[in-house]
Image (cartoon, helix red, strand yellow):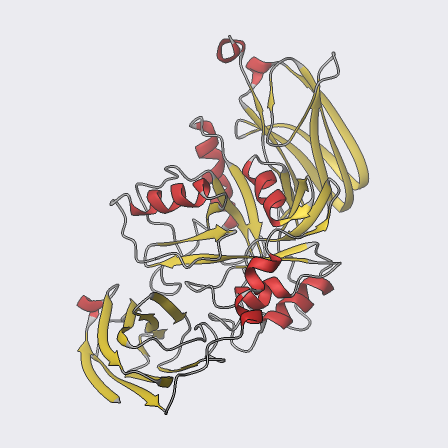
Length: 462
């Protein structure tokens, strides 16, 4: 069976889902899709059109990657990265063109070819060993003890737009960075998670999720192994429903790089869900890639502080957004998450992040805590309910750096810092509603930042 489609798209078709339906016959052994379009772009900006495929049972894969030529191959035991191998169910399949960006100018012309090959007898299904890898690996703990664990919550592979960067390459890079955990969050697909879960080792927890890469903003769905429908629109309540479902299922919803540059250069990268600012989202990625990179992390931090000042109890996270190793010779220092968890397991990490028991760092240590006269103790993410002595301990701090105490968004205390040191101060509950500590280099670049410790006023406790 072969079907061919052709079409013309203009800027009026930008941010649409153009569906083409084909009937896959019985005894199909492989499916091949060839999608091409021209022009590749205009005004030095590339058009971005991607493919999502659905079989009669639901999601079958996505190829969120650039270029004006996309080829997809699916069979029982193998598939193009981003897509799911397995039985090719007979019935109606949908080949969807997702038009993330169509630049003004010459109309875009595309061709789409779908070929379904058949052979005598039933096709072979995926082996049970591969199918069961997720269920067997999720929930395993690398370390059973409570402690501080360092890792990445945001990364990509060839299953989306990281070219030839495989799951094995990602795991190897995490080892070189001396991480305890790494989450794979490819764009709009979960195809790499079976391989990711199977890569767990005695030295590294491999975990999963998906980056919900919509036309109007990105969000991480951490802990899920199910595809999440990303075809959402602002002001409809749909994104809030996804966040609620993620949290209800024990997963974690994270607004990603909310202040990043958006269209047309970074299509959909800026958070434009006006009803989710932050709505029912309670975790925000304020450090994406290098601090002074193109994600506008300083603006994301100020947005986070503003939301805290509105009385919202939020958690800040970091993500490398890695699409491969840093170019050789380039000094790239992304932020990692340093999480105090009950164990080094996916469930324990998500539980700890949910309550804010983490700080963010490109390398230095930065520990914030508070202790009352009666011995009660609080760490980042907790709420102090009485007058207390706050302390911050830092280590591996570079020369000429500063450690800054920020209370309700305003500087409270600044210490010159180098190497290892400690600062202390006393606070009553009515002196601030939240406190964080920043460590910055001499040029202002962020080196580490804690999550807030909150302070409950006597009225709120009474």
